[in-house]
Image 1 (spheres, rainbow, N blue to C red):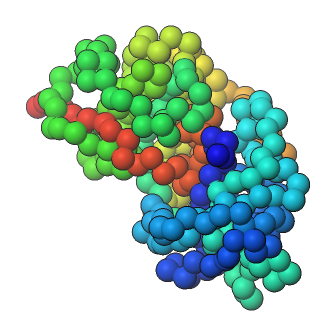
Image 2 (cartoon, rainbow, N blue to C red):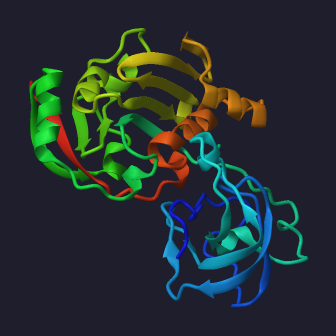
Length: 306
């Protein structure tokens, strides 16, 4: 049994998709530094899973249980004020190398999601644990309609959807709502854009009314124009907002840097834009967006009435 949060899955870079590394039980391996692990690690394969896994980008891989020679830590825990040590973890084969082999193929580099083509216009509010939304909480249709009532606009339901649909709404009349016991996930272009006008979006106020004392994050990404934005709220109060694009540079900024921003900058002073937004999602999703794999999380699609 491995601790919750120890399955660190990130996108593939520098290795051809469809060709996962293969190892045997008892084989000594080196785990490359990836996802939110703080360091490389040496360990032993203690078991492997019979079925290949398919990642969100469609590429296959094999999943192994690794027992580390020395306990390991990750940034998700640290950023949430926890000091946990992992003696073992599930790790994808693409992040493992036979002990003694070079850490990566010649000329290859392993990086994060700078070329993934991410698009996201979302509000996430939660008063639960950081990994709550990875547990597939049951959607609450009555709470979703309570949110709409508080929002004040007129919408009609278009049926069930998932977070994979709601991550990037296709037009301004679409509103994706995922309402759960301890969280609210909204997909909406207008609501997201409102966060970077200086006013607290009405949707944030409604989320706070439904989840008293919650923290909320508005995340905006559009990689085609290198657009990024993040706005962080605590109990309905804006603490920090920042947005920019390749053409305009930083076009909106309000509030001092968050403690989590300062920690990230101390670790990597160049982090900004899409990478920073990805990292700021950790306290809300339990991981970066590009490491999140609960895309079948149930939501509901609403369309604005004319």
